[in-house]
Image (cartoon, rainbow, N blue to C red; front, side):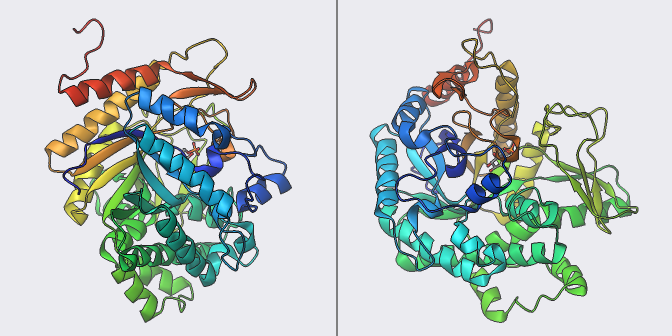
Length: 471
Ligand code: BG6
């Protein structure tokens, strides 16, 4: 880790979820544009209109004491076609966004791919086609060349697990497949692409560091039996190891490979690609933490993955069973959950950070953490005390892990402002700043924004922030 860097207190967004301007500035169509339009679903055509309002948004971050902004670049905004031609208007947009960050003293943390694959690559098979991995390498190199003089922190991919599982196994994200064999293939191609991106970064001699961002789900078991231990290992391979082991050590988990090899044709995993994985290990891990994964042993039944995209969860409205491997416990009546059925469990972050440190010895950034809630933003400042409590508890967990030796260099709230939350639409709000999607996309900071600002000021002056009443 760069020991001269301050601790980064920031927040995060992603291109498709906030930029809008889906047809402006020479941008090509993304797979999400096509999928949502074709299925007549709520889309990010305008999203938070960040494309036109990024200056106001970055200024608001800076006024809120935040010293880092994690955002992603849109591949279809930067590369016009399969031939790899660069769209100069897209480059100009991101140049201006990056320059604005620096103008306001905000460090840009750049994710190269946050799910918006150009449709021209999806038409060729998307992540099932190895050529997409090579196209990613070209795109990443363009980003390093054009922005590398002002960007010091890069991440190749955001959450391979989430977009690969949702796109190829659950089927609720494009390309909407439910095919375990294709899922394994896409997963491998994505990790291969990530390694090619890291290798290109190193070969180019760019300054700074490069990592990968993972949707981190530390695994717990319901008890201490051998059956549960085995289920936990399967769950860990499914939820974490195929990304973290591969990106951090260059090796795919061998027991996972052995199991997959019994069922599927893995002949695409060739020695040269395994070598690329070894040569493309990351400098740091970005961990997005929303919840842990609590598992019980698998008993029977088919693979079943049910997600709640509608909110107002009742216990058991989500279900994750992987045939022969494990069952995720989501129906425990004692669990504290969000409206969307995600368990709120800060201690998972503390223990998870300690475990990741023990396994990989790499610097870590918490690249996302937040709570999605349906909120009324029409009545002035949103009084989101639940979000403040959520942040406080998770920051306390990070501090406890740091005391136990975890090397954590930053914390990014998801999200900087309200944005389009994929299949949950704009109703599921995560922002520190409210966006009134119905009334001109006006921005109004929430109570949590003020709390975060005062908390950061306390951290930076060495006088920890105290709540009113505790002073
Ligand atoms: C992470 C993603 O999975 O969690 C974000 O990186 C996403 O893009 C966030 O929006 C929250 O998930 P959701 O499904 O509630 O939007």
